Every structure is written in C-alpha cells, then in structure tokens.
Amino acid sequence: MDRKTIPHLPLRRLGKTGLDVPVVGFGGLVLRDIDEEEAFKLISYAIKKGIRFFDAARHYLNSESYIGMAQKRLGKEHFIFSSKTMARSYTSAHADLHESLRLLQIPRVDIFGFHHVQTLEEYREIIGAQGALKAFKEAK
Image (tube, rainbow, N blue to C red):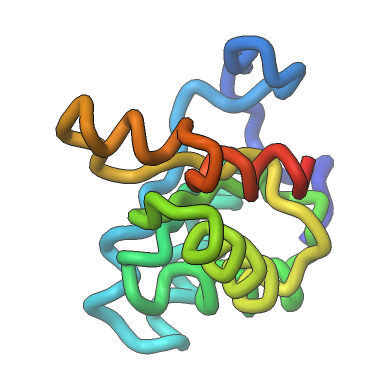
C-alpha cells in the first residue's frame, strides 16, 4: 500500500509525546470478536481511509496479534501503536509490555498506558516503588 494513495486526516499533537496522530483512531476492542482475515480486512480498510493510530490492549484478547500481523503485511510506516495493561505491579507490567511487543511484532510501542484504573489505591500501587510505572520507565 503506497502512503501517497492514502487519504490524509487532520493531525493533532498528542500531549507531550511528540507524536502527530490523525484525529480518528482505531480501537482494537472490536478485534477480539472476529477472525484474523476479517481483522486484516478491517485494519486495511481503516488505513485506506487515513487511520494510522491503532489502540490495543492486553485485555482485548487478539487485538495485539491481529494488529501485529497487519503491520507485517502492510508495512509498519502505516501504524502508530498504542497498547495498555491492567497490571499494577512491576513484574506483571514488565511481562505485559514484553508480551505486547512480541504480539505486535515490533521493538517498541509508541504509547503504553494503564488500563481501567478505578481507585486511588490502584493508582498508588502503580506509582509505588515496585509498581507498574517502574517497568515503563525502564523500557523507555
């Protein structure tokens, strides 16, 4: 797929990341309910419409593996990768990050976040001395 033939969506700077992302992204939750070929068709269609920001999560079952497969077939230059973890501890977040990289088939993810943080206690665990944030800082 030639980047020159893909429509341009307006871009916005994503916080302090330095990334300019299209104003429309692709949420990977839907991928957990379809097969690999249907996922490839859906992701290919999104790219043809100018979408480059793809959000997955460890909790979304096949989302990371399907997005990884698609980027191998279509070319990494079409993708900005975001994933997230439900992990709260260093050990679990470290494992999730490496599993996400393996499934996405990439050496680094553009954005990796904490999914579904609902309480102050969870937040404190994440930022604590052996919390998930430590794994992210090490990976940076």
